[in-house]
Length: 320
Ligand code: GLN
Image (cartoon, rainbow, N blue to C red; front, side, top):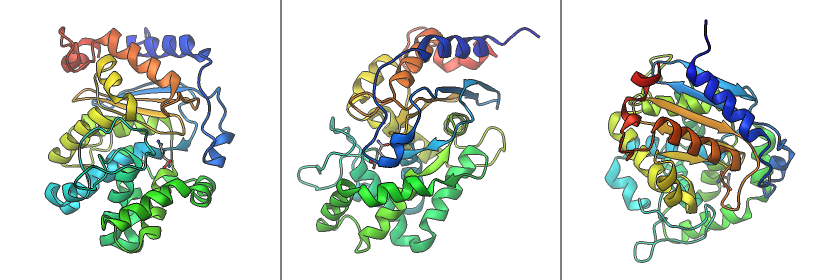
């Protein structure tokens, strides 16, 4: 059988960007510094369940900030939009992911994609579920991935030991009454959710679950409801790539989220989950190869939400 066009494209992209030698592996969480800068995987999962991938797509790495839209979706479903929005805003901050800054006037974190907002969301979940909060997060992310995920205890301990900046953020939030008294316990949920191990295939499947109206395209399991998916994707679109979010929206034009271990997950609504894994990061904490691959996929297939050819909305029809 001739090779599918998409398979040929992911292989060509992998070949082209394998030699891109920019960026640095994150070391501020000491355990992350052990990652190999050469690792490079690309996975696409269509909402039909078809998978196209190449490179190190079975290599596990920690999900880090890509957990944030998922816990945000969980909080929306548990507490409702009004209650969640009393704790965390929906405005891009233009600041770095770890900035220690709250919104003027309301003192809320700007949005749930930066650390301050994500810690607030984890604290909300912890305030209700206490010792069960993390297991619920793990179950939800596993359902989105369509397989049982696990935690890298080494990365968890490493961040827990050295995460002074996040600890400072949590205590600032406590000062403003945005997290409950057990801020340290909430931080443990946050550090642990960031330490969930995934592959690029898992992330593409999780993206495809969002693209597929919240239902995992392979297992058929409903994971998020429609309203939460809309909110999750909107926040990823405006805030998912931190202080690169504007340029990302301009160049790639699909909701996405990156993590400091080197993952990028992007969602083409109703069509496709895209994920890359490559640890070297640019100065904003986004994977250098990941950005290039997504820019090129979006350009080549017209995936941008505002592409005038509007291929993005009928991508599957065009290629499958
Ligand atoms: N666990 C990381 C941190 O809080 C997540 C950051 C990220 O992936 N951008 O610093």
